[in-house]
Image 1: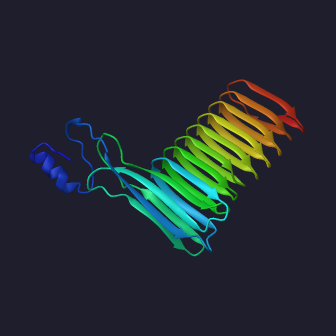
Image 2 (image 1 turned 135 degrees about the horizontal axis):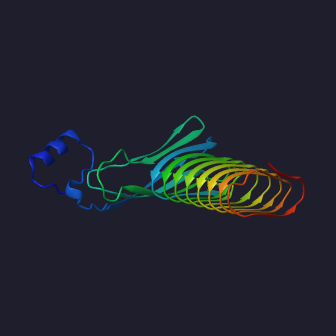
Image 3 (image 1 turned 180 degrees about the horizontal axis):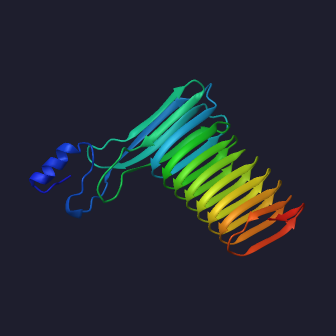
Length: 251
């Protein structure tokens, strides 16, 4: 990192140690890349709690797997270390992958994660930004996400709170509770009920074995092949539904 040799820059460097300062708007590229691999014995564990910051997150459930295996690609600045750990407490695994606060402009540091877990391990995820992809999970999933696309194939009961970004959910064995700010939504092949509260963005909901309930701000809504449909609010946008095997309620 290079600062202009001014007294002011020196004072800032001393008073804000540990922060990244961008003097005179000069662009900063992150750019040191490193990789870390971690493993944790999964015997006796039934839940993973993950707190992740910026970067992509992929979690793959694998039948018969006896370890949690984490592969991290870290993109950062010189002397700026990530908070990256995988630990156990009781029957729960705890994953932390994030950076502390940062000042100035330029690209932010981030961590791309690929994690393999036993398929029946419950997930509780709090994510900052970046794409999320979950597959092969045969357990409940709770997800709170700031921004970035979400794709989940599988899972039992899903509870999702999302700020922005597209969402694709499919082959879910239980119920879905979704509270979404903005971005398109595609939901298909669900064996339970689907409850959606959405701010904006188009929505497609198909092949649901339970009842669908929707409260929507704006954007088109398409619902096909469900056991019932309740529209609490449709906002603006086209509404179409077909093959509803049950009561249709418009409030």
